Amino acid sequence: MRWFIPFLLLLVGCAKPTVSITATGDLSEPDGRATVVVSRSDSASEVVTVRLSYTGMVDDDYTGAQQSVSVPSAGSVTIDLVAVDNTLHEPTESLIVEIVADESYAIDVGKVTLVSEDDDPWVPPKPGDAPWPSPGLSVLILRESQPSKPLPPTQQAIFTSTAVHNWLTRNTVKLSDNQPGYRIWDDDQEPTNAPVLMQEAFKVVKAKMIGDVPMLGVSNGTTGYVGPLPGTIEELLALLEKYGDA
Image (cartoon, rainbow, N blue to C red):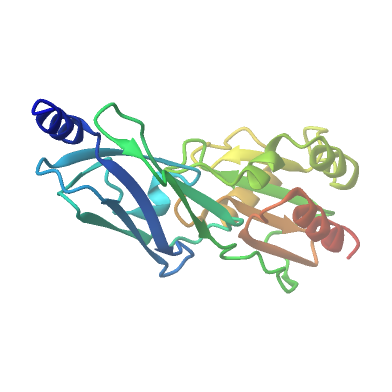
């Protein structure tokens, strides 16, 4: 039996380290913070490199992510994540931080979820003076075609929405080119050949652009609005109805 004890020690020494992940806090704007802890329970002397993946939120919504950490014997490593504040309306999102499987370790608890609550909610504007002369309802949406970060899916859907285009076609004034009085343009577009009314709208809305935030301009000749594009199709149609009925 003398061989058994060394053999047992060899088996123990060959056992894989077991790693786990935990998290506290959240990544809600404007000042959310979260702490992610990667730990191991074994007492082997070698440092273990644990790989991590991040899915859900885009990576410029937060800072501090590490793709791998070196965890010492019976120890842990802390990762501090910090929310990045911006002016975009973003619905509630989740960031999943997960330990990536590897032959060098076993996984006990392998995944945590951090939440970023709905932020910068869209507030319906109060009616103001007409931002540009218009004989009826005219609408201009300006957007950055290559934004630094993706727009929320609910807002991105506005640009291709059949409901939005049909409403605008039915309710906006006919322009000098015999087309409905609305346009959805890139903010860098030069509207030189567009009807004069849309050229005037472009000057007004372009001047209000803030970074990559899509902007909406509405004028019915009496009142109107220039500001951030609503975050959903439903919010946009509700706003247009208000000015269309004025």
